[in-house]
View 1 (spheres, helix red, strand yellow):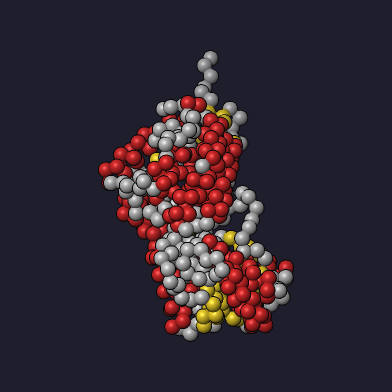
View 2 (cartoon, rainbow, N blue to C red):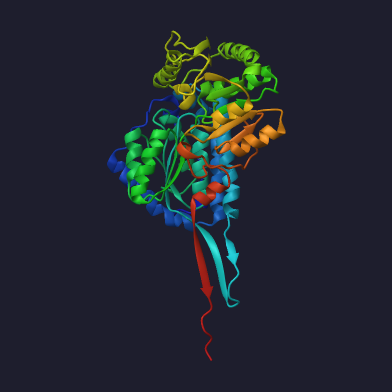
Length: 458
């Protein structure tokens, strides 16, 4: 086991990943087996490294990711269409997360127990062992840094498979991180769903952490039920925006547009369905249409044509079932997989845009009688990731955060939140903490120790 003080953090030549001349090759079953074997063999030695030294390695990793933020953002833009400056901000968020876990890991503690005077009793957190991380394409660096940072800080080794939609971004991040840790502590493999399925069903894995679609998450959960592997899932959501009649409809439209159209709607906590009281519906819709037209002045492409087809299918289903297109709602000419910011009115609960995650720049609006009806309909859903409420009433805000069956409730802001928060998704949206200090608990298991004194010899 190489001591972390010998790890320079200096990456090897990665120009071919940056310029695309060396596309990642999907791993074979034999390669996966060897990678898993090597990572498991490296884990006891990594767990034995003092927590402060593991933290120092994570700090080095954070520094290297910051240094390569421009390269990562450029590759991310090429693979997913995410604007470079937005991608760079996301990369720096990932670096910050690595630094956060570098500090939190060494102070992650158990607790002592009060037992017999001549004995010591305590509970201690131990690494679970080998973690498999399956991460998505929409925010690949920040999400991977969170899962990998928590796992590595607590003494686990990691095999990471990034999405096949951004393989070069994932492999570039993997090579940057690998240079900061001992050999086989961080391993990155490339491939599509078949590679992920092999990883999820391989014996000897202690944790599978997946961020992605609901269908994949359910398959992973079913496989883990047979093997006993611990599962952490964030499967996406169908996040509602509930608007009260006492707010400025123009401001509400600005919030709705930001929540629905930012990053072309490809954010896990994007606004997916909107409930507005009839009292302010007309001015709200007029303002939302104006916002959509502004977003369409500089449209952002979706990740690929397949994603655009899914978005358009949802819009067509809504139209076929009575929704009215006020802005957008069509596939534009050109090669880029662009879909315009779209506003749909007169939406009904049974439409796909109201009951499924569209994951595109679509704002489906349902007009309701009042805030209570909007809140009730927002609560009726199979997902449970996040929700937003816009209200000037403290009573309605209190009622909403208590009643909404979701992991995160945002009041009067579609995005934002203090550092260090953590939440557990509900129902189809997943299980377990996926970020924050509590993720350290998920990556460890607790052992209780009773340390008695031997009998004295007379």
